[in-house]
Amino acid sequence: MLNQNFQEPFVAIVVDPVRTISAGKVCLGAFRTYPKGYKPPNEEPSEYQTIPLNKVEDFGVHCKQYYALEVSYFKSALDRRLLDSLWNKYWVSTLSSSSLTTNADYTTGQVSDLSEKLEQAENSLGRAALVGSGVGVSGSSIEDRRSEDRLAKAARDATKTSIEALHGLLAQVIKDRLFNQLIDTMLAVSRKLASVVSKNEKVSSALKRADEVKKYADPLYAESDGFMPEAVKLQLLLSKEEDMKEALNHFQKMNLLKPVLDSQAIQNVPQLESQLYKISLLQESQEKKVSNLSDDTYALIKNYSNFVNDVSQKLAEVDKSTSKTEK
Image (tube, rainbow, N blue to C red; front, side):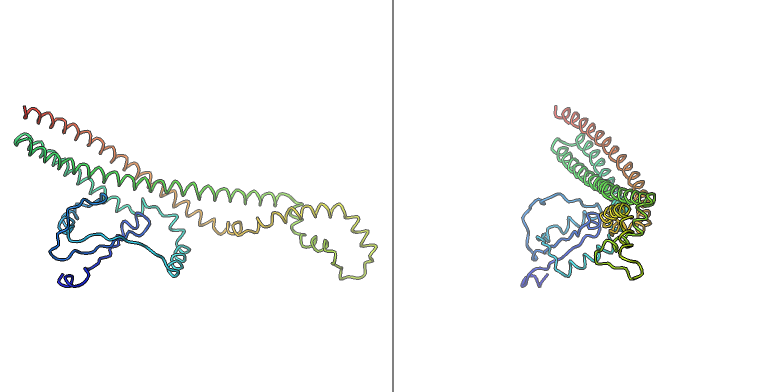
């Protein structure tokens, strides 16, 4: 701290790995310490922050010794290439993963911390009732305000946890709508094209003799064998005129469909089928986990609602007892 009296104060850069994984983007903060002996003005925080109970004591001791700095991000050409390479390597795992299963421990910790905060709020409400019955009105009102503040913070934390769970569910629904239905449509189209080609003998024969038909359609083409006279060739071509016209029509139609059949997407369908099957199995298992987690979340929210109703009833009773005491 002695060095800060003569030079710039220290700067700390903090990266939160849990919030980074939960939000899907880097959660980074920069903080600078105040010089020794400086007392900052009492200002309320710009936004509410969830603080776990095991960190409340440290946060309260050191919160007046530093202040947050504004952080801006930039990405160089090398960073862009590295991120593109990482995306090309891990895009399957990124799309197949779910924040609900990846951050299961984090969500469990949040719910456990929330239950402890609700328990503290309930205990403080009990103490407020005792203070209201044994002490004057001013003491009970101060205790009531503290209890209500704790309960409001617990309600905000519960809302934040529920919103994060809903975001995870919405992401799973969007991925299902975006990828599963599109892949099913592509597979259905490829199967229909394959069945049409395999069942139609004329189309199959035209595909097999496509190079031959194209060769005869070239006006500059000449047979290597010279034993057949030109008149015989002409008669042969005239006798096959209808068949050649029909074959040419089939060939033109197949030429229009050839870019679709030769496209990289259709060619990669057999190779990606096994991967798609694995992803579908993983998706099914994750949907079961998400369903169980949503049921648990609903049960917690229901219990929380019942608790809030009980608290409101207790507050009403405390209010009645306070009014009787005043009289």
